[in-house]
Image 1 (cartoon, helix red, strand yellow):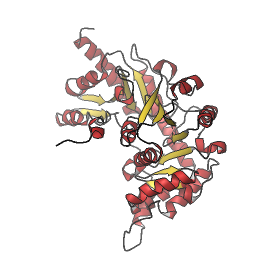
Image 2 (tube, rainbow, N blue to C red):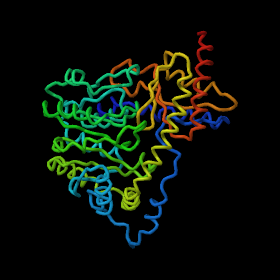
Image 3 (tube, rainbow, N blue to C red):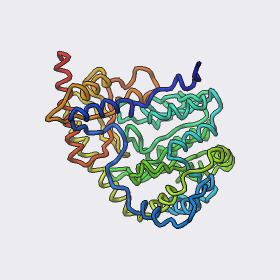
Length: 399
């Protein structure tokens, strides 16, 4: 019996694919610094659990398909912090940012239609788009110039009659690239000229460093009819397991279409939405302290990675990822070496090979992504282990 061609053509997540080798290394007594996945060790704000504990209804009933009003109203007030103004009808709660993207691609793309996206990009976009038989068209960027992509000639050269949308991840995963408001305006002008949607994934919105301002396509009112934002509590509030995200758009036809899909899956978990509402009510000072913490982790990781001879790496401007080109030919093989053969004083490290973040075959084979989600001292040690591992790996290969 056959499975669908759609599923057969999908890849396993390069972020999670090597987990079993990490577990085996730990079972063999090694300490593994897990820099492969964006799971912070920062404590989830206590208000999340407190709100759930204070839930006093006798029955945990279905929520509305679009979300509970308590959470919608909290998100409306949160967006006002950045002078963005939405109504309840403009927001639909989802099971994390992942479901938000799946719903958006389902609502926007017919089979064979295309969405542009700068590569390297968050690998699960492949799955989200393939589910509806859409096609991601890559805008190839390079480590040497900091993965810049908001360029008129680069974008317009990729537009075809099948192009339906431009996907923007800012701050970026896996590169940490942060779009300025002027760059967003440029993308917006191209979208208007070619009548394209803008899918803006902003789940790392506050994590912009070195004086960079928080930016959003939602700040550009002239684009309101074609912009759809993706939001989530996972990263901003260190609540990855809560699985609460959102689709946000002022385009009524799009939101009506997505509501049809949302009603088909009934609703998101009621209690998690109650907890998420409390998170969105946190004082703005919370974002300042979170930004400061992740910036310190970034600095620790970048300083140590930069010490590796032959590495190519630009300091990321936001999010909590760093992508680097390493002086090895095959990063996947190097990672297997790190997990199965290498240790330094009983310690080793996991990261993610970057090839799975590219749509263009052959690219990213010598690149890795690390998530700087551990405290600074652990980030320094993890990066040091990568440096020591490269030395041992290349010695093994006779280089």
